[in-house]
Amino acid sequence: MTDPNGNGVTQSFQGGWIHSSAKGTFTSSTRVMTAYSKAGWVRGSLGWPVSAEACAGASCTQAFAGGIISFSGTAEATSAVGVSAAAIAKVRADPASSPVPLGAAVDATASLVADAHGGGLAQKFTGGWIHSSAAGTFASSNTIMTAYSKAGWLRGKLGWPAGVETCSATSCIQAFQGGSIGYQKGKAAVALVGVKADAIDAAFAEQGGSSGTLGAAVAQLTVVSDPNGNGLARQYANGWIHASAAGAFVTSNSLMSAYSKAGWLRGSLGWPTSDESKVTDPNGNGVTQSFQGGWIHSSAKGTFTSSTRVMTAYSKAGWVRGSLGWPVSAEACAGASCTQAFAGGIISFSGTAEATSAVGVSAAAIAKVRADPASSPVPLGAAVDATASLVADAHGGGLAQKFTGGWIHSSAAGTFASSNTIMTAYSKAGWLRGKLGWPAGVETCSATSCIQAFQGGSIGYQKGKAATVVYR
Image (cartoon, rainbow, N blue to C red):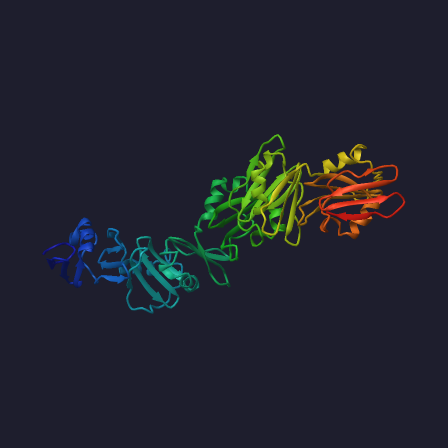
């Protein structure tokens, strides 16, 4: 056979072909031949075979002068022109496409690799590797390769390299089919599965670049390794962009303060999972953003974080648009019990139980009881505590405020005042954390005695004597 790609001899068999040329004599299976024929056979861009088929499990690849043909499992074989030793040599010789100082070749020739991600070629050098696949031909430094090997090499979730390793003054990053690998100079590289190498730049461009809402960058790209997931972060004049497997999202400086107090991405919130959203509502306007472990809400009431457990109950209660309205405090926790206050109530949980909401438990409810003689027959006097304190407990969360003449407690059981006489016995019995739980009724008095109901019993006294606790 005579052809511009070179002359040679071919023969067909029941299960494939044999091709013999100046490149060598090699067999090709029927599956490879199907793709080879579609690509123009020896007369096409692939040219003559230059290797036998290489297989790893159910994945096989064969190299040709101008590319490769691969298949995996039962999928149809496909060809990839340009995957070749020549492509590797070109990248090695071109500083623009190979900024990595590769040094001398460790492998005399490139090795043919078969994999479910597709076939390709790989060659090792003293300073790194070059990989050639359908995703392109790219050099990777030894620093990148260390993380790449730990992540399973091209057989792992990252797949083949898909971009040039690029470096700034402080960091380097390279794109792969299934994510990227990056590192801060002087530190180990980090596999960023599911994180695009250009995710930060792409999100910045969507915001309008330096003339957009974020303003100019004030810091270099940071590669982050954390138990909450690996990713990228960069600070701008008016906020940050964080990129993780969840995506790349903008957080303004107004929310970053709360995010930082919560531990940044290393805290319970983890990485952002959405951009900020502006909310317009009769309960008030504000800004919200979701994270792996909860949300941040910012309104005229303040800026507060809410855990995923609180958010589950908050969503069921109508979110900021429901009776609870916007958060007015951070979560308060005591042991395994946590409570968060909202404009119109609270959300509490304890142990593994589902969080529940209680509308009406609020500073406003306490103020109303204090101002209403019918619901507050106790002479409370002046406030000792300037504001009500948020309390978390296994009996449920609530609010408590101290006055010179007694206390007011607000919980799912209601909002009730208790005199100092009642409070003395209540404190000895463990306060709301004891068997009595929260107050559950108004303190009522006759000419000679007073009594008040609690969740777990009651407290009563003869006037002029100490109060006594009666449990149910």
